[in-house]
Image (cartoon, rainbow, N blue to C red):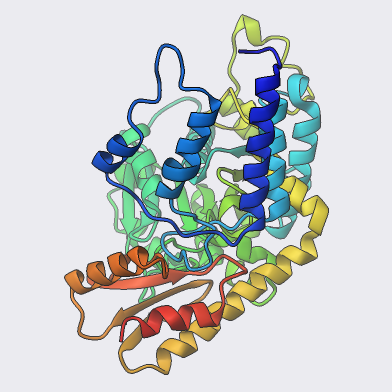
Length: 453
């Protein structure tokens, strides 16, 4: 299997052609299939003797691939889509083909050096100090978890190793579900949910009021607060400056979850929304969301990487050759050891296109979002529920219930018009557009809005 044969040459050339054709075309939306349909059309593929490259390629090209939605379709507007540049997607093939291991400087110094330049740009956007740094991890879930583990270890160290009755972190209702899951299920830490303001933002004033009302033993266990720089559902940025002030007074770690919205730091038109992010002890942003990289990549940055290294460096005799003082090992900064060089496609695209192109692309999606808000205001059958801050539009179709939204969502996907799913705001079923693809136009949004009439 590991020697290069004429059959390998033919297979790999076919794969390369398939990749080039996919990158050159307008992304198809495609549609999911049922398990029964796939079982009938595909059958058993893993056998003792193999099915051969021609059949495996055919099944992927004709059946399995089209059963996966294309997240880079310009009218894929659900969840938080992804729209990688051609340079980023292309270099992802290189990363896979070259078998780069980038958990340590010893084994992947070139990859780590390049990734760190991309992290430096993000750190500068956030106003982090020169010594700030971190690593690219799988996604926001791992980034948030890793940062909060470092935060707890830092708090434990400050307390001289003593523990409170219960550790706790302050969040709000709009905090991403991955943070809540990490705290309650993985870390066994209490999540203190602070009421948001009328826009759902966590504010410094609300945080202070909520904390001062807590029993002393509960307040004693708080070691961090999580601010969100662009909530997934509404695209709202918390009052980071106000939260930072309160966190500083109480000596808490401030973590900023910018998985989706952190890309807005590169856009002058919304940069002021992120005031205070420069005070964060840790910060994440997912380039595979609004920074045009392929899945999966989360940039995790620490103000003081020494604290993160103390929490995450793994020790074993076989690791002694990589645990060298002064070398930058990405595995020292997160819940990971084995690590793909997942930041390289993002770095390559940045290096190819320059950061100004990223600013222009993000500003374009913001312009389309603002145009979409105007389109909603101009139509009687839909109503804007939240004034957009970033690139998310939350709105209702007047008179519809949950069944109507579900039927419309299914119909638009079956008809290959777009992919838009229902959500809720203030307990009300509604829907939303998440615009992160520079190919999405106001006409695309108008087409979907008019299909609801």
